[in-house]
Image (cartoon, rainbow, N blue to C red):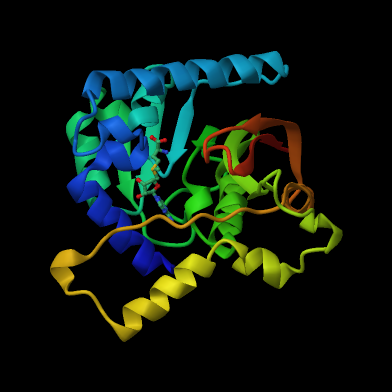
Length: 261
Ligand SMILES: C[S@@+](CC[C@H](N)C(=O)[O-])C[C@H]1O[C@@H](n2cnc3c(N)ncnc32)[C@H](O)[C@@H]1O
């Protein structure tokens, strides 16, 4: 999906069932999330992340924080409770509208709609802390890599960036070990989106009427070694890489703890 399509799909998720689109626990479908519990999970997640940052010995300044792909502000609200200012950025107007309704921190917390493939809405060296989970995994690497470069541009020297990204789908134990065949860049690119390509062709041959438009999420990974090389090329200091479980059991995924110099 390009950014136009990505916006269209997330807009629809935000209109129909935003909390479930963010934390897709089956019992919470059809607007069944308890809002308090949903936001409580954001508070716990930010507390846990700050503990991990302290545990790896990084110093965090509590000036400005950015939550990229903020959805309805589950994490932005938790950041606003700890930082002087919190900023949430999202591509979907419906998510931003809901985030503004849920905001309990007035001017300390700002939500920004951004459909660009960059963060030119912010100047260089603006944030002390940048956080992004379950966002970059849903866009093509040409976009996620550009946003990571932008995170490094808007991060203060010595600031901390934490983001989550899958590396590759896990091999099932009953599958032959395909690792013997070195995946080409092309294979990596098309491994996951095959289903998507099929859907696109099917959609072109038999377009659904607008009323039955079903939003969907695509999944992409960037191999960890490639991402580490990319971070090094962009002069980022990797503080730590930790195993993560956001995309579920069928993906290898990591949290990257990064600083800029
Ligand atoms: C699964 S939700 C996660 C929300 C939030 N990070 C959380 O954990 O509560 C993914 C969010 O990323 C947003 N998003 C997707 N692509 C984006 C992009 N290119 N720029 C900004 N936001 C984007 C979607 O609109 C959606 O709100």
